[in-house]
Structure formats: structure tokens, C-alpha cells
Image (cartoon, rainbow, N blue to C red; front, side, top):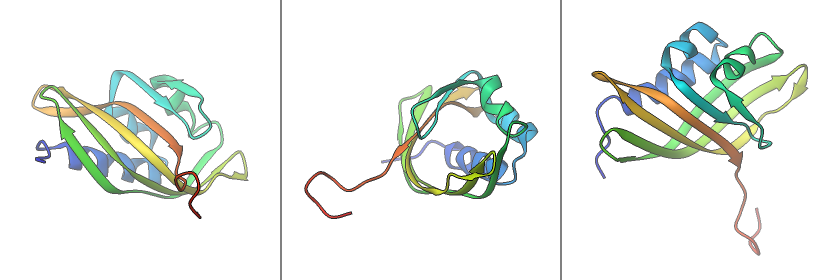
Length: 128
């Protein structure tokens, strides 16, 4: 499996911008038609995703690990694990989550078009 040039860098820059709560840096990485799905199933537009920082989101740590990327030419899909130490309006929202990222080619580089953050749990019938 070959990872397209620039996708890993995009994901690393996105995670670093999220970790430092830098809405301006995140904005530069998102595609205009971006949509994000949060860990509780809510869907956010690009503007809503960026507004989280001014509305009470505070990331203290935000890391994507175990990323596997598949190249589809003008798009790439990455699936990994998101580990975050985060609070939302003062309530802890830390944890380990499954994350799926969709990147699209934008000129010579890549932009993040979609993020889906969901629960990470053991398969049914197995201890967690």
C-alpha cells in the first residue's frame, strides 16, 4: 500500500493545529466543502468545525496513530486511531476514537474534505 505524497503531512499538520486549538491553521487545511462527524454522531459544516474553538473546545493533546491510507487518485482515505485529551465547555471529552479522514487533491497538495470520529471498542463478545 503506497501512501500518496503529502497526505501524511496533511494529517500531521491537522492534528498539530487541532492540538494547539489554532482555528486559523485548521482553516487552511480544510476543503471548502468539508464536513466533520463528531464522536457522538453530530455533523458539522466547515464553518461549524472551525467555530468549535471559540465555543468551548479545548484540546490539550490530539494525536492520530496507526494511520493506514488508501490512494484513489484524486482522493485518499486514511483510517487510524485518534487519541485526545479534550474538554468541551468544561466537560471532559478525552478518549481513544476511530478516525476516518478523506483528503482530496487541491492543486499540487491535499486538503481535508471529511473527518469522521467514532467509538473505538472491542468486537462484540470480546473483552475491551
